Structure formats: C-alpha cells, structure tokens
Length: 279
Length: 137
Image (cartoon, rainbow over all chains, first blue to last red; front, side, top):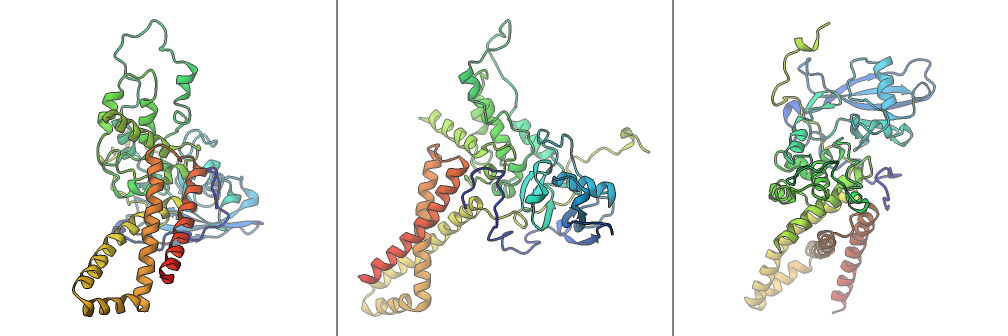
C-alpha cells in the first residue's frame, strides 16, 4: 500500500507489532504486567475497549496495561476525548498531558495503535477495535502517559535554537525576501511533540548521543534561515558520528509526523551541506 | 492541598520505567526495509565466507569440489543459496535507493513508499530471473 500522507492509517497491516517477545530486552522494572479491566457503564450503548499503559510512581509497582471499556455515544470523536472521558467518569487517576486540543501544542503526543500521533487529532473511528495507547516510546515515564522530556529538550538546547548574528543589528528588523522565507517552510511548523524522535529506531538504540529527527529538523531550520550567520559553527557542532550520522534514513520520522513535516528530508539536507563544505 | 513549593524537587535523572519501543511499534515499510537492509548486509558477509569455501574446494581438486557441490545441491543448500541470492538483490536495490537519498532525492512520503515497494518487487523479480537463468545453464 502506498502511503501519501503521514495522517493515513493503513486499512490493514500484516503485522501489528514486530515478532519479538512483549518484554524483549526490557529491564525488570520497566517490564509490563497485566492490569485490571474497567467495565463500561451499564447504560452504555456503543462500547470500545482501550488498552492503556499505566504507571504509578507512588505504588512502587511495575507498569501495567489497564483495559477501559468506553461508551463512544457518551464521548467526543477524538482519542483525547476518550482519555478525558475516562478521567472524568471512570478513573480520575489516569494521567496525561493535554492543552490545546487542536494539534498546535504537541502536549498529547503518544503511541496510538503502535504509531505516534497527537491524541487530539486522531479520530477514534481510525483506531483498532481494541485500541492500544502507550506513552511516547523509549522515554523515562513519570506517570501513566506522561514521559520525562528533559533529555530530548536538553538535546534541543544543544543546537542553540535561536538566531545568531555577528553583523551589527539594523535599525529595524532583519529582512528576508519571500524566497528566503520560503526556505524554512515545512520546518518552522514543528511543534516539538517528539513523535518522530520517539518513533526512530536509531534513537531507541542511541538516545544518549544521537540527536534524533525532531532536533535535527530544528537544526536545519536554523541552518537555512537567511538571517542566521552561524552556519559554519552549527555544522561543526553537528559533524559527529553519533549526533548526526546515526541517522540511517529509516524515515519512520517522516511517516509519523502529525504535522506532515519531513524530518528525513531535513537531515538529508544537513548531510548534503556537510558534504558540500568538504569539497 | 500542597502548594507547588512544598513538592520535592524533581530528580536530576528520572528513575521511572522506560516506555516500550520495538516491542509495540507498528512495523511499517520504512522500518522493515531498513532492518532488512541491515540484516541482508550481515547475511551477505556470512555468504562471502561460503563463497570462499566453495572456491577453495574447487582449487583443492575434484574430490573436495564434488562433495561441496553435493552439499550445495541438497535441498537445504538450495534454500540457503536462494536466500543468499535474494539477500544480494535486496541489498543491491536498497543500496541504490540509499544513493538517491544521499543525493537529496526521493524524500517525499509518496516517493518513499513507491521506491520501497519497487525495491521489494525488483529483488523478488531479479532473484527469480537469476534462478531461471542458472537452471538453464
């Protein structure tokens, strides 16, 4: 099947997950144990089950999968509505980040049915009959669906995501032609939800040293900004076997971006700039 | 009700569990072909040893060569040989796809999927072709 846009959900996939044991290579305290089932209210008319990752730091127990039976006739159309419905009506301890409910803040990024997306822009109608909701992959979990993002934001900090100039500041703002401005289209829209970084197998294996697609896309956004005057130093910082070159063009990033951006293309651009600089 | 100030400070490195990744992520053409490219590369390095063994057997005389041929022509040998030929073409076609990316082409999602399926189709077709050609010889 040809996928034309990252929002496309395949009608059916041969495999729902890779054929590895559920707790393959997982440290003892990260191992997932069976949880409980929360039945639907008795007057429910249209029920769908959601298997949701739970972790309570205060109980000292392992993460578990709780099954929630949700009455879709009583609840909004998006996956985020399901989570809010559960929190309001079933289990108020269910914890997740959310803010804008319209795909501009990036707070509710999570793994829905095996791929990363924003809960607020994924229709329940697009999910599997028995939907699964996990937090973003390969992150330290604070509680339930809330990952600790300090590491990825520290990586973001490393690329110094601000305009750097040497020339004296002009009287008014630094101007850009429409053509120059167009160079950053498709990159400035990134909302730093980290769907791509946490869906990248290279980042799974080398999260400590590989910057990951979201941060590298941001690096590209500053490299091609005509007003920025630090391209050389920025490239020096990126030219590293791990920071940049752990990207093996797997392109899970481009497949999963909920804003339809193309981190893979941006990283390819950085590699090309480095090559051009050498010759 | 405790205020924010009463809460203990967050630890420098959080000690919570690591959320699952490979164990739950949906296999897609993107990741499956990348893994296949890696694995076929590893397989080919093993097959290069087999190739050397075959050449050494040929150099050692007709006795060792005919016993090596017998191994190759057994069912297991044929299956391994077929898998090796498929690995070769998969790695070759995947490598060409990577060359396009390195030159900056083919990053749009539609192109990623079209070129991905083209790699799969081409390696199957080329394997079949190589098999037919060699059986006619």
